[in-house]
Each structure stands twice: as C-alpha cells, then as structure tokens.
Image 1 (cartoon, rainbow, N blue to C red):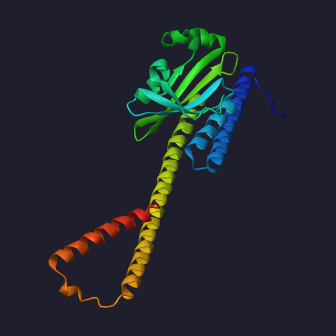
Image 2 (cartoon, rainbow, N blue to C red):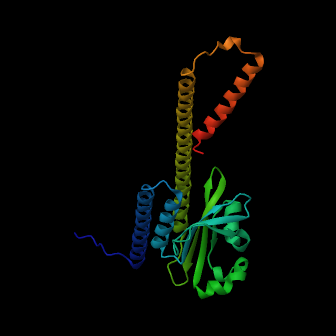
Image 3 (tube, rainbow, N blue to C red):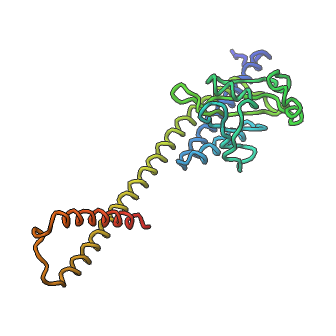
Length: 261
C-alpha cells in the first residue's frame, strides 16, 4: 500500500516560507560570524566600527548604514563609520537635524520608520528622501549599562527588500556586540596609554639619575684636585644654608635635563 506524499498548495506555501525563513536566519548567522572575524583582527574602535558598517550594508543592500557615537551633553553625535563613504570617520552632526537618531539615543529604544518619505518628523528632508528612493529607516541604539553611547543607522531603498522584524532583531544583536567590542577597545587603548605614561616616567627617572651621577662625578673630580679644603663642620650657618640652596638649584637643573630640554 503506497502513501501519497503530494503536498497541498497551502502546505507547499508554508514549507516554502519556512525554507525562506531558515535561509534568512542562516545569512544572519554567517554575517555575525564574519563580523566577529573582522573585529577580532583589530582593537582600534574606528576600524571595528567601519567593519561592522560595511558588513551590515553589504548584508542588506542598504542605501545607507552609519554608526554614530554620542557626545557629552546629548545634543550632538559623531559619525564615525559609514558604509556608503568609508572616508568619513569623525563628522559632528546636530541631533536636532536627525529626529529619528535623537529619539533612539535619548530614549535608548529602536526606532523604525516603515515609510520615511511620508513620516511627519522627516518632512524637512522629504524631497531628499524621495530623490534617493529611500523606503525605511531603522535606528538601533548602542547601549552600555542602560545608557545609549551611540546608534546604528540604516536606510533601505524603496525598491529593495523589506526590512523585517527578524532583521531588526539581528541589528540589535550586532549593536549589543558592538557595545561590548567598544568597551574592550577602550580598555585596550587606556592600557596602552598607561603603558606609555609609565615608560615616559621610567625614562625620566633614568635620565635624572644619569644626570645626577654625571654632575656629582664632575663636582668631586673638580674639588678632589684642590688642596687645603677644611672640614664641613667649620663652615658657618650661613654657608651651610647657601650650600642647601645650591643643591636645590642643582636638582632643579637636573630635573630639566631629564626632560630633555
């Protein structure tokens, strides 16, 4: 007795949808792996952010993918990585001109605008959005310890693929990964800074020691060649104070020499 394996149209449609969903998830996982691979090769935050912006832009075929870091005061942010123009690395923007970016950073929540050209908050740039055929805008905050330290800004083309809920969740995962990576890069750069400061201090101390020994050697050699010097105890109180003053002046000169001046 044979069993029929023919699928009904509804079953075939559900199966096709599930296959497409799994393929979408596979692409997300591959993108995360590639992002981890890219950022593992550097501990400099600018290179890390540029790698993330490039990978997101390529994965979704975006019109724009930018990463911003907040400035103190919360009124401005710096564009530090850009998919469409990798040469932009440190561009200051006023958050009043980007209400969607301001909402994400100040509120700490993802902002999704399905149709940017018809959104009331973006009417001041409506013509530009239409000319560039912009469809949706998604801004995902980069949060660290319950505070937004930046945001990932994404814009899709009107005739491009739809930005789904799963895509938004994926970018949120990337934002969380970015926050942790930035923290690690910050710690690394602080460690390098402390190391340089320690090296400079040790070098200064060593130069001071060398200068002091050279000064004492020459001083002793000069006075050792002279005869008839009396004991220090025979000196008057005023002479002793003058010697102390000269020693202070000499130490000041030595410290200046140690600085390489």
